[in-house]
Image (cartoon, rainbow, N blue to C red; front, side, top):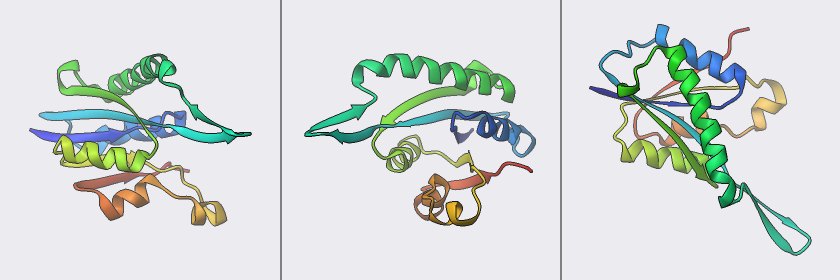
Length: 146
């Protein structure tokens, strides 16, 4: 059985792109991990550090993320028995995803890009760029169609 992770950004365009993976890959006899990593933001207001989200907010955020991932599961036509839906919280989504891929012995990770171009695309750091350099498995990068 293959082990595939679909790393989902939760914006509508990204989810639409990722739902098209079913036309690219045969997902039968596959364990699919639908993963979203919520990046923890740390900032400073005056002298005190602020962290968003707070640990108290994790359950509500996780429930919302799992609901969205459930909709992606339906769009992909996947059975509950073959899907693991995961919401992770980390200050570094790149490192958290890399560790998850290693821990779960994933064969392929799929993700979508935002399709940034010009100066914005040149300077923007990207999860896809990070995975191209450091992923422990194969990568499928899907980009939005014009």
